[in-house]
Image 1 (cartoon, rainbow, N blue to C red):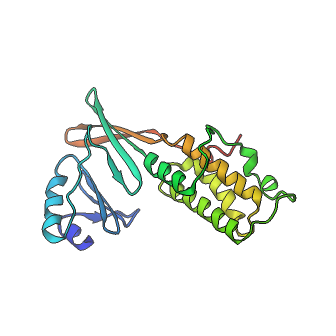
Image 2 (image 1 turned 90 degrees about the horizontal axis):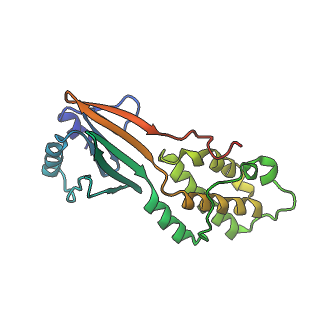
Length: 219
């Protein structure tokens, strides 16, 4: 796949092997899933791929058709000559909460104190049995995936604190993990937003919203 893209003029990014760039066109590769980003000429690349590989019918992002790519909801809108792209994980989070059977308690914020080592290592908390440990690992794993994709970096610090103690997890760790998941569900609409315009055939992107990794953990 990479050789095919390179033969079409794409070059692997020096920052990420899964990103290939050709002028104003970018393609993200994850196993056998691809996401093309460009100014319209990417349709030719899609057709070239379909000639070489067995592919499903491609979906094109538009104002009326959002995309779901690897658990990411991607939507687009246009106003005053500018295009805005929003990326969130609303559907992935909703499905995850349903699968984990977490109570949908409204929790717009998390208590930073609950992720301090002293609070997590409460002597009065009971050590989890094997089933409880498995549940805790599932909770932390789901939070870690959301953090790893970069959309919800506000979860990173709290998830890292939980992950440090999962080997000797207690009921306190499980309670705090549930609190974190409820916060994630309540704020599932939070997203990264990019606004850009094309000038003289070149993109002029601007990051409008981003999260610091420590957001939600510092008071």
